[in-house]
Length: 212
Image 1 (cartoon, rainbow, N blue to C red):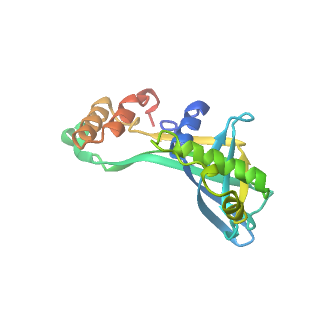
Image 2 (cartoon, helix red, strand yellow):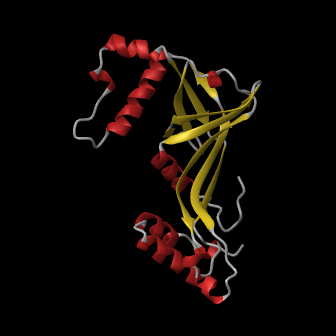
Image 3 (cartoon, rainbow, N blue to C red):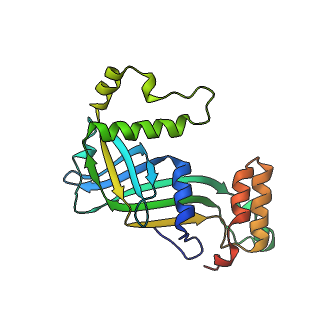
């Protein structure tokens, strides 16, 4: 990932928090048939130095067979993205020397991909995934609510995967490279459009890094 110093974000705790907030990630690998990507909900466990990602794939998805086990896999998490119009910049009124841009947050997690074709392991994983995403609902559904033979049959159709994370890249592109007046204009513009969460991200990002 292209990481200008202004936007590089290396704090592992906030990278992990962002990955967990996304839930869905994009798994990318290379293999005999070339590049392949799958969109899957991940669990991130605090194991090792950088954590371990775990998920499952449909057995009918060739991805779990079509990858180079000697090369790194890549899991991409992205979100909190929005368009920034030059109309919000003070610089636009001062010199006119501005262009539009897109702000966003992204984390790339790299590591070796391992397939776990074990029914008990996969059942534990889908139980945890379900519990996580059902939490907070008035009537949370649990895997145990379905007939056991039905769940056993469903589990035969999926395989587990895990990625011990060997390296992480984080990019928080939130107008850090703009002058203070332009940043304030972006915050005001986003708030006026009802994008309060996005405005807060710009306001809270570190302008001291935005010198590129």
